[in-house]
Structures are given as structure tokens and as C-alpha cells.
Length: 194
Ligand SMILES: [Zn+2]
Image (cartoon, rainbow, N blue to C red; front, side):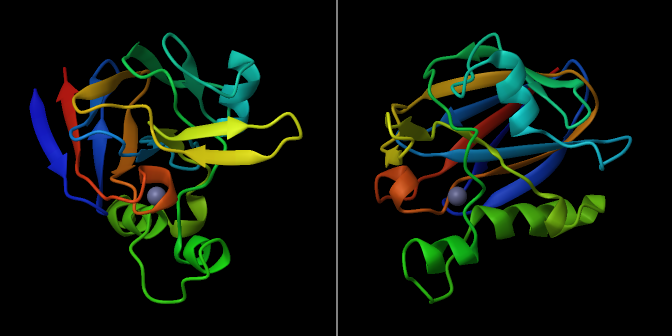
């Protein structure tokens, strides 16, 4: 088992082989981790929020839901979930997110940049990064369709575990967006179990 830690507002990318489990831990509570995945054999196959939501028939994916690729093949299965609320609607925060939503034109760390900078070494370009599975992100949908971003429900030590269903390249961040993390940036822990 390998045990790692993402410092606040950072990201990483790594291989996750079929059958291995990835456990993502909110070490201090109320911290989002964005996850994306690509088929190692052909990175033009990627984790699809649309396919996953279609087949689970819910926007709130949890155990035992399967996360599918754009080619409708299982990529990851959620095998354990201590929180039960994650988002699969919103894209990873980016420089433009902070300009458009926050009116902040200063340089700002972002999940999008933290993903593409780490995925680059695997030959995955920025434009390949789609909607991320936003672990611990708490998005409520109003009856009129309005989205509300609320503090994550996760407490210190809470985790979710996903099993790889094919060999994957995974990107993972400790999210950089103020709104998603109740205004405070914290680290994220992750473990890879064979
Ligand atoms: Zn983010």
C-alpha cells in the first residue's frame, strides 16, 4: 500500500492498475478533491460524467455506482463511501473560473492547471480534461435548476474508495476554489491498495 498526501491547492497524476483500489481521504474535513481518469492504453478514452450519470440515473454517485468512460466502459467502481455526497456536474476550477465567478483576475492556483501540469508527462493535453468527479463536493440543485455550492459534508478522516476496472492514468487534486471548500484550503490524503 502506498500512502501519499497532497498539500493544499496542489495536484498529482499516477498510474492505477486494474484491480487496484484508490482511497481518497479528507484529512481535516470540508475539502474537495477533483478526480479525472484516462485509459492507459488509449488516453482518448476518458472518464465521462454524462455516461456515468446516465447509467446510474442519479447525479449523486456513491457506493456501489460505476464511473464510465466516454466509450461506456467501466473505469472505476465506488466500493466504499463514508460521505455519500460528491459532485459530477462541475468542471475543475480554472483560472477562468476565478475570473468569471469570483471576479478575481489575480493569478490563482486551480484544479485544472494542477491536473494538466501533472498529466502532461503521460501525453494528456489540457483540452482532454473534461468534467471531473469532484469528491466530497456538495452541490445542491434547486427545483428551478439553480446550483448551490455548499460546504462539503466530509469530516476529518472521511474517505471514499474506488476500484480501477481497467489500467488508468488518474489525475487528483486538493481543490483550490474558496466556495467549494468553505473558504479554507486543506490537504488531501490518498492511498493505493493492490
Ligand atoms: Zn478546484
